[in-house]
Amino acid sequence: MTRLTRSCPWACGVGAILLGLGFLTPRTMAGEGDPSAPEPIPAALLRAMPSAALFAAVFAGPAEQGADGRTSADLRIVALLAAQVQELGLLSGTDSTTRIWVDVLAAYATVAESPFGITLLDVQAQPRMDGGHQLAGLRAALIVHCRREGTELERRIQRALSTYTNDETGVLTTRREGTDTVYELRDRRLPDWALLSWGWVGDSYVLAIGEDVVPRVASADREPSSGLADDTWFRRAFEVADGPGASVLCFARLDALRNGVAPSLAQKIGRVGAALRLGDVDRGLWAFRYEDRALEAVGFLRRSGVEERVILAGRELLADDRERVVPDEAKSFAVFDGSVRLLYYGLRDAYLASCSPGWAERCRQFWRGIEQRTGVSVDRDVLRRLGHTLVIHDYPAHPLRVPAMWTYMVHLDGRGGALRESITRVLEGLQPECVKETGFRLMQAPDGIWHLQLGLLGPAVGLTDDWLIVSFSPEAVRRNMARLMPVSGREKASMRQ
Image 1 (cartoon, helix red, strand yellow):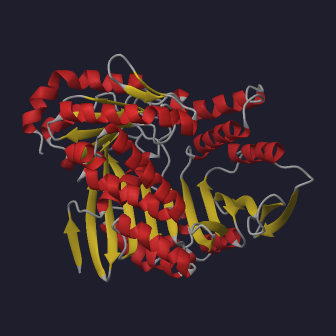
Image 2 (cartoon, helix red, strand yellow):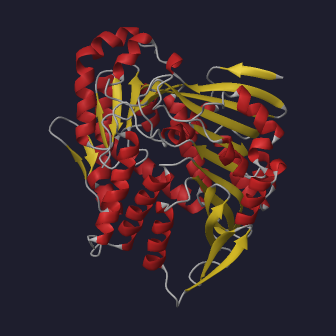
Image 3 (cartoon, one colour):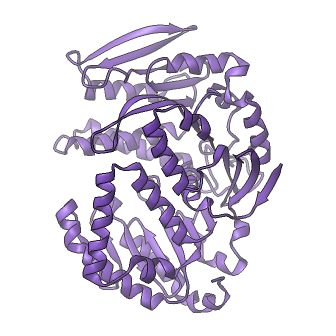
């Protein structure tokens, strides 16, 4: 039996995570039928994903050139800038963490130019004395569907080898996988299970961690019955969830994940799943596609033997009079219809369930202290004043196109003034703690916008009468607030509370 759900409580936590995944693939504003629109996910890439995967996320990649000629060019510019910064030695005086993040950003820009997938085959962890867990095994792969001739990926791998390894700590070997050569690296600074391997498998370039990962990808690529595209349940879910034409697919075998790990880790996974309203879900497939510039998200779940199709996001969830909050300049937007308060609690409880008991209690004590010093109840004075509409869009674009650096807009229940006062008191209470714990300063501009001083990644928050706006910089918040001010009062009467 299959049932249709328009919006439901379980979607709050996992929906936010998956909407973020849906936004990770750069795209254009190309309309239906436009030759610059993103191509569907290649069938060859789905075949290369092992059907036994516990989790898989597959991305179609951007169009070569969009209506404004920028999508693929943006990625190349980011990769080129990162390469020039490295080659000119501009990072020589920075700490290792900064250099690693620049490399990660450049690698993402390179990978995202092509269709690619991430697959998790196995994960193991050992309990620690403090109640947390230590990673004890991981088998996962990044599979990139790209041309063999002069791939930038190979050059980036060579650069990473020369930067982060040497003959004293690492041993590099090769072996054959069919007609292709696969490279394997063992580094004495890493755990024994952390075998790094990379090379061509069929039409894809594979980067893997863990034993026996590349052979399993190669087996899935060669043998029809071993790939995700040939799994019976996946094929059914793919059709029901509007998989054909999707820009992003996420697949999870949650029952196998819970049953394949040690009991203590299975309990933790169960608590995280319960917080995300996925505790009784056996399998799930989530498909993301664009209709014009609106992200459409549909999930198909098997929950205790009952299958359901769930609409997570789509233009239909945004009433005509509300679409004015989405800037015309935005290339993409997504609308989430559900309690933002429940969304917060789902994500918070999932995070705390994943932490050690000691750290989770420290986090709770920290917020209890903030509430006591400011006299503000976060639940009563902040969260209960948030509405049921969350809009995410990409205007203005982050200068480096960093994933997740978008604008988030939460509709309020009509008491923006009271909420502004409560948030101001909470942030004032956080100011000294922020400097003490992180070294970063939390500041308020003369126009009331709060921001954290983190350079290009510094988040900021501002409020109008009807909307809470969070973005990557004060200027990004300011631009969105300026657009809303003239219509905010008129929208107030028509918004669904």
